[in-house]
Image (cartoon, rainbow, N blue to C red):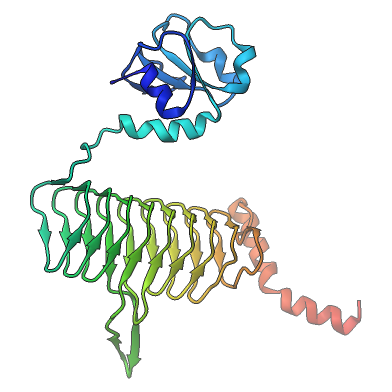
Length: 319
């Protein structure tokens, strides 16, 4: 629980109302609860706020100051979305940061170095020669293999595996021979990794996740990949080996990137796209066909398979 004054100090906001008001949490405009902050990102949502909840507090853009007609307490901020990001951590249902807060069934290897304000959930495994910085949160069932490095202010959600063996194999006659992976995974500062992700160690060089990267659930990053600073990766993305992803990329859900691909800085890749060539310039890229009724798709696919013959015919006819 916080007072409205304490919230205002965190958000550098301006109070119109009672500074000593008790704030229990955050609620949405569709599910209003007493004694909570209601973040309004658009003026049209003002009509949804019921005046019977006089003990709530609206968090609004400071530019809306002259448009207010409600009797609710108000907190004016420069950007309600950024304000939500800042204050949500105070109400998150997670253990408080302690110098060392380690739950049951945690297994740690040799020569492990861990910074202050560290939380480690149940059934976590940390291998040999791992270094972990300050303010790191490892949720339940996280596995960090040998020799990996985790920076400061890193959040890794449940079930994620860091430093697993990559899918590096060579074919000998009719069988496959695995190539041992001798590199490691290096994760920078201020990185957030979702649940059930896998980040493979490098074959010889390292797999690198640079500062400020955010990764959604169910993402696979293969060996020797580098992810540039402040890149955002949505769920179910697969990035094959030895790719170099530039800074500030935004990769939509279910994107597949084949091996040895490079992307420029400030690239946006639409959801479900397949990336099979380098993206050398900033911009938005889409590599999917439009959604069609199945019979329409079959007709379209038939013509796609005949395009080379059509082009040859047009060249012969000199059309």
